[in-house]
Image (tube, rainbow, N blue to C red):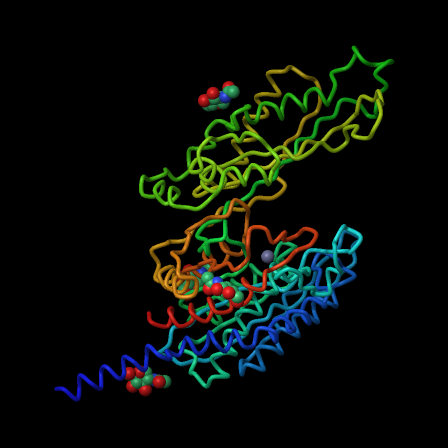
Length: 489
Ligand SMILES: *[C@@H]1O[C@H](CO)[C@@H](O)[C@H](O)[C@H]1NC(C)=O
Ligand SMILES: *[C@@H]1O[C@H](CO)[C@@H](O)[C@H](O)[C@H]1NC(C)=O
Ligand SMILES: *[C@@H]1O[C@H](CO)[C@@H](O)[C@H](O)[C@H]1NC(C)=O
Ligand SMILES: *[C@@H]1O[C@H](CO)[C@@H](O)[C@H](O)[C@H]1NC(C)=O
Ligand SMILES: [Zn+2]
């Protein structure tokens, strides 16, 4: 009995003194300069997916990702997803999607990791302080296009795995990788691939984790929802040529006047969307859910300061976040064909095209919304009695995504965050649209979680994109901890 007690105590002590994860963390700390160097190599590849002249760079990037997985002992398929037709009619190949596998122990949980290694275009002349494709470290930040979105997070996963291996620790999970090169250009080809591989590659995946977004504050977060988007255009035509207001003003039903009235009918000055029925499918907010918002760290003053505004549409932190993530919103983006140059040109535009969009939340449906919008705008237009031609069209539509936060992987994510950062995870949503989260969940019917490591001030898609060294390295630890935690299910 006593010997057993001592044995237990010793065992307990041994586990406390050097639990395997602590060794992994230490290894990650010691190798952080290598990880930065590795990121530098990836950032040097100008994998801009929207730029056809860089398509070879994107393809090379996919090969580099594949080789990195192979070096970890994984198997890789560079999966052909077809071609892309450019507006010019020219046809170029889409970059292959990297589907990788590491481990196939039937007794272990299988985790699918999604990321992307294409980037938004970047030029030094756009106003960058440093060469966007030369990783530059300054004040603890790693500047370069793709550092935060999304090459840094993808590498952090691969480094976390490599750390287990270097320490000869058995990986406690099987891993599958889904790394694409068209995310910044609508993930072309991915939906078809998910469907085609649903019964094979995806069938034995238990959980899918995405690291392609950011925290809301300095507190690490788990993201469980994103809004969808419907983009509309309204076209109004009053003449077959632009007219001079001195000659024709006072004689015609002007297209621009109609368009402004139509746009003005969409939303009132307190931000309320005036389209009848728009709220009919919005999932009602529960009290439990509202409580979640109370606990979120979000500084309204800092938010206002970032925007450069003195007053927001809503007064409290909860209401601002709810309207950013949880309720639909409507924004007017622009008018094509309207005079917008300097000076006082007296033109009456013949044809103008207004552009607006609505962010969708669960359970709004793009087709139903589109019908509501068209019925409403046709009614507003008819009431004006204008003889002009007016057309409303839905340019693109995608649904919102929301995960089940009670899924086991959210527990694992929470525990991993508290292990690495010593704080409770913040549960957040995104106001923007990350269609792949919904596609993955909807097609494969697996649990999907977003486990971001970026900061809200990383300036993704913008000049001087960065990832802090702290987030990169602590993020690598977070992924290692997640792997350890999720294996216990
Ligand atoms: C899986 O677990 C069972 C029961 O513990 C064991 O008999 C079997 O050998 C394990 N399979 C592998 C591949 O480790
Ligand atoms: C906007 O519409 C909502 C709902 O009808 C209303 O409560 C609000 O007062 C309106 N705002 C203004 C400025 O009219
Ligand atoms: C994040 O990383 C930095 C440097 O690697 C470290 O000093 C800091 O303690 C880490 N933060 C947490 C909360 O672990
Ligand atoms: C994909 O496979 C899962 C089972 O792994 C199934 O539940 C789901 O319905 C399938 N999706 C499609 C689109 O067939
Ligand atoms: Zn991204």
